[in-house]
Every structure is written in C-alpha cells, then in structure tokens.
Image (cartoon, rainbow, N blue to C red; front, side, top):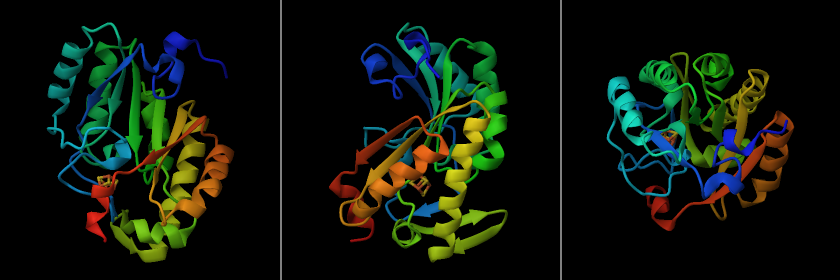
Length: 230
Ligand code: SF4
C-alpha cells in the first residue's frame, strides 16, 4: 500500500526522517519478559532510542501535556509510546493513547513493543488511534533466543529457557500478523549481538517479512550493554 509521505512515520520512511520528528511518550512502568541485555538504568533497548538514558516515567496526564508542548513544533509528526519498559504490559499505555488521540487526531501514533502481548492487543491499538507498531525480534531460532531472554511471563505463568524463547518468538510473529490484519503498519527492529544472533539474521528477515512487516532495521548495540552477561 502506498502512503503519502506527509502521512508517513519518519522511522518507516527514511525520506521523511530528516523533516519530521517524533514525540516520545514513556509511560510503561513494567515489563513482561527479562532480556539478558536489559539495563534498568536506561530505557528499554527495544524502543531503539539512540540515547543511553532512562526517561522519566510519565502518567497519562503528563504524557498529554508533553505532547501538547512538543506538538507546537510543526515538524512533530508522530507520537511514539516507548519505554522506559514494555508499553503493552503497562496499564497506562491505553489511557495515554486515548487521551492523546482525542486531542491530536492528526498526529500518527506508534507503539514500540517486545511483541509478547501484540496478538491480543493489536486490534485495541488500532481502535486507540495507533497506526504504526515497532516490534523487536532478535531471534527466530529458540536456541539463540534462549541466550537473549531469561524468562517470559504470560497469563500469570513464567516460562524460562527454550520454552520461554519458543513462546516469545511464536507470539511476536503472530502479533505481527495480527497487527497487519488490524491495519497497522509494522516495522521490526532487530538488535544485533555479534556472535549471538549473527547466523539468525537472514531467517529473522525472512520470517518477519512473511508475517507482514513492511520495514526491518538491524540495530547495532553498543558494547556497554554486554556487561550484563559477559
Ligand atoms: S523488553 Fe525492554 S524493558 Fe523488558 S527486559 Fe527487555 S530490554 Fe528490558
């Protein structure tokens, strides 16, 4: 589907990236998985922000005020709900999205997620005015994923090792398919860990493309992040 450039998300279309800006809204206070590379001293890496900082957690009301302030800049085209933890695991995400969408229906809304809850929440995201989703998929081989994720928590049960890895991969791909069915445009970010997921990259690209993602970005993770498991 062709989308006019002025309606496109700068992270999805490099041609617009130099003109448009994103208003980041960090409202997520919790996470539902444990990445071995996670540092709670900085925002969720799956939001793929450049800065190695920890954003101040915002309430939905504070998030709305932040967007009101930032949207005064006409280059701000997108509101992105990302960090400090996992947006789809947090209660505040949908409250913030509904308030922001009511006040700024013309701005694009994007959510960055690890994808675990995307199968159930894709339709609700679309109803809340979200048009774009960024899903982080770091592996499609469960042996690789088991080195990147300690555990996955779903419906009150914790899954560890390969079992958790298998569950997360399956739900990420199903979540991408569900998001596409709900009319969302899906971008996949893959954090590149040399020596860990190098051999999995091609398979990741093929799998997320088959699931419906329109853009795939490989993100080099800086060395400092490895300290958690080296
Ligand atoms: S999804 Fe993000 S916040 Fe959650 S454990 Fe992984 S890096 Fe940390």
